Image (cartoon, rainbow, N blue to C red; front, side):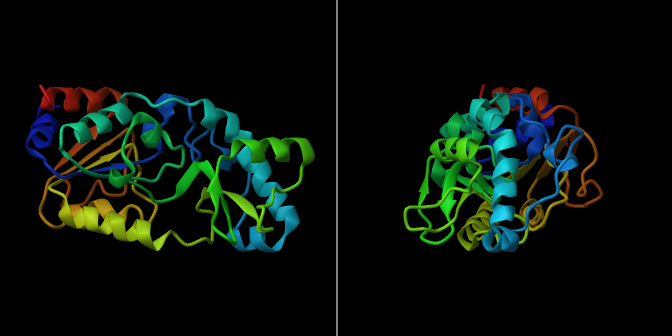
Length: 248
């Protein structure tokens, strides 16, 4: 942990890359893990959502299954540690694969956050791009079992990236700029197996800066020569303590 704290102590533009392993401490199951919804349901592809009312209902039903858990979840020590780095002037960007919105709830500013796969904290119209509070739309679906519509008549969808849906070009560009400007990259709670998201830590690390991976279980970057420090274990026990030590 001392080596990680030393890296954080000298960093001024750290890129913190986060995956599902940091949110399990907030009570959100890893969607790929044994309790994850992917074990029970097939994904609805974006083109099916846009072309089929049955697919839209299936997607909203899948999202409704996890809605209460997401809505009631609270940030944990890992999320708060990232905020501490930002307040200390050491954070370049948090780039997250997570859709739970907990970095925002914890206090990470919008200017320092890229949610590559979107967020469950908003719904978005697929036509006019209006965004708003999901709660009334989930309640509408719960009561009526009909996929909600926007006032413009377009289809509303939780503002997450569905299978077959392209990531937002602006998000990709912001993540790339953060990787190219970072002086440290730390990957937390990710298997680093989903691309293009997992390309950003490597893009940063291959510039020759320190690359730290903390995860419980193997990752696809474990054999990369660019990795400076690989820490096996619970992110919630390792990272917040290292941040606290670095900021003493």
